[in-house]
Length: 67
Image (cartoon, rainbow, N blue to C red; front, side, top):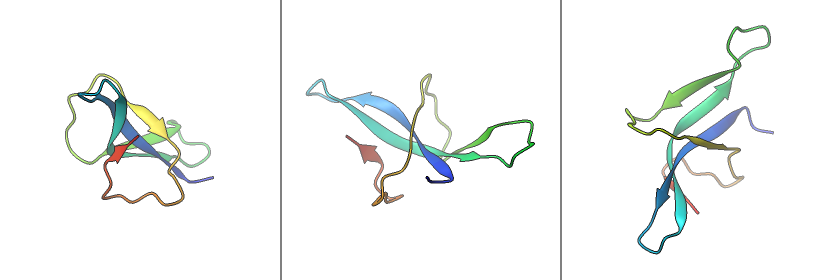
């Protein structure tokens, strides 16, 4: 299990398929911390919905779209 989750936002393409664009990472905080996770965004995001995934084994930070 990874110590972080990939943060994405859903994006609907012209083909009506939903893809997920990477916008940051969420990290688990230490045991006993007041907050369970910390969210670090790559840039300011005006999104109303975030979707978190465990990273794939071949997850490349430069690859910002997930099918």
